[in-house]
Length: 489
Image 1: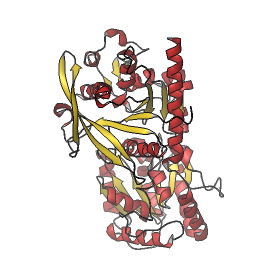
Image 2: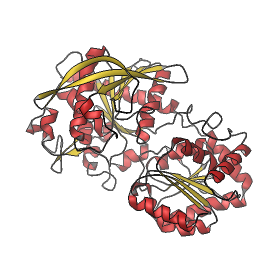
Image 3: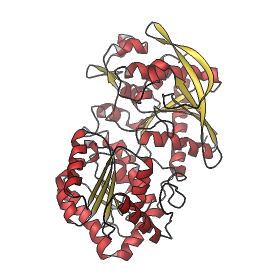
Image 4: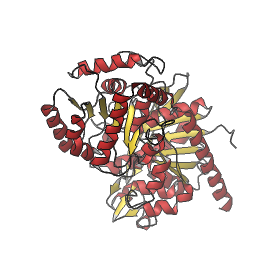
């Protein structure tokens, strides 16, 4: 079965470059390219948001929504890879649900993504695509494994389809009032702890976890962590019960997009054999950020400004960090508290700190290329892409050892031969400060060793090639399980 070429539908609420709020879009935009490179027939389904303008009409179909019918218009565009693969992307369109300025955060989220889930399954015969596996991502597509099991179980077209559900961040679950069951077309019998009920609400993430054939999350460490009360977000008991079907696969990054030797968004291109050119990227970033062009450690931070990212540790230790004689460049947006806090730090230390509120993809690349170190002291981190991108650009990660950060960053002080960054475990500002101090000391006192560390970081391979094959293995497990269930049935 390992050589079988699969038909795969990747379903995601966001896909780069069409619509993006975070790392999920990067994964959903790059994994299909890697699967296609392995020879599989992979296609993508996502909502057609207002910002997506170029798409071709394919078909339309009625979708029942609690006694009334909504029309789903299916449009098509494509993802193109550098290897020449063109991957069909099916856009589920409905003006009322998706023609809005933002992707999420509306009062009718349950209705929007129930509709999306129903329409995605219903469109498959219309577009004449019968996938072997439907790969669902995060709570917005959580109802799909449920609908596949209970609404389509007797329809021959769907009977052999397996479902995989990926948890990208367990904190965001899609929890709604019980009345949502009507919108989903379900009776009260589904409002039980064994099915969809969760603390008096309907939980879309739980639907995916309960009904998918196979589950995974985006690092081995996080797969273990979410089975504990500390990081299980109330679903740890369910995840422990499904532990034999739960796997961890570290995300990759798109090595075509994130390539310092060809990246047009950085001022000077370089590779692991021309690291002197990286200094020019640093000097250009210092000029752009109005910082003195000095040979001091420059620490970059690109992040959503939320508590998950360990920003309270940085806030508690920022004065000590700056006393180490470093420069600090931040790019991100999020909670008002952190935006104001870092803006005030910039005002107090204009010659050491640059703060850029909002998000700018081009500036992000210049920060990855121009920084010496990249800061990610997360409270928890399912996988993290920032540390993988920074490695690719020879920018040394300073991380808290949790989730995917633990799986991808080896502490230099613990393993000087294979270390590719600096890490700490206890969630304390003192440990963060000690770790930054260790990194700064190597940078200042051992420049040759720092060069070797940068070179080693750039030679790490976190492309999708290996992870994509792990996903293929996962799909095959899901198919085998589905086949066993069919025989038992």
